[in-house]
Amino acid sequence: MSLEALYKIYRAPLISLAYRMLGSVMDAEDIVQEAFLSYNQLQGAGAVQNERAYLYKIVTNRCLDLLRSSAQKRELYVGPWLPEPLIEYGAPEADPSEAYLRRESISTAYLLLLQQLGAVERAVFLLRELFHYPFDEIAVMVGKSSANCRQIFRRAKKSIHFDPEQNPPVPVAEEKVKDFVNALLQGNTNRLLELVGENAVFYSDGGGKVRAAQIPVAGFNQVIHLLFNLLKMYEGKYTYAYLNVNGAPGLRIVMDDGIQYVYSFAYKNNKIESIYAVANPDKLRHL
Image (tube, rainbow, N blue to C red; front, side, top):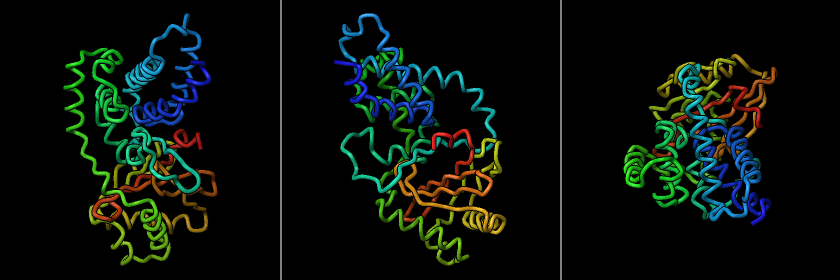
């Protein structure tokens, strides 16, 4: 198969794997690009029996290497760490059949759950859960035995507590986000009580580079108080637009000084349960 044909078939799923591994759009794109270049430069590339497995192995190992090399940097990160937002413009399409494109598995909440797994655990879990690789092939990719990979997968799956049914359908979520914004702008606390859970948490990722809360803000009253104060402080100094963030309706705010905030949401019992705001400019360059 030609390199162009391989690129057309496998680029999207490989980026999907790398993004879930790393939580970085730019790093995922770079690693996948490098994987195809590496394959193209391989002596006797035409003799590779399984191009798909070869490319997945390259991408998986490059992700593992990057995670290991950046572990200390992550430990020193200022404030909450959130994944780079994956932005879609326009209305999302109907749910695709491919598991790797499932919208719920790129949500901010799901990516944060994946971050709780070790690097190898994350790789084994994703390769099995979303890409349906047999354990013997996963074992070759991550340098473990097949039996060990089975154990790793069972342990990882047990620790991932995620209920996709909590996410409302896209049209419903879109209305909730718009209602939430309108209620904030109008100072309508009663409506906000209907939209936001009592135990809501606000996470703000500025990476120490822009103004952001350095610890999560928990509880309905505290979260709404913070948002009301921000609206008052920056009144008339921002614009906002609705867009799809990590597979679900979200929000992008651009301040007059150029600083951006990209918001995504998670739900529980039909109410907003978590609010994620990414402002670290390094994580928004791809926009």
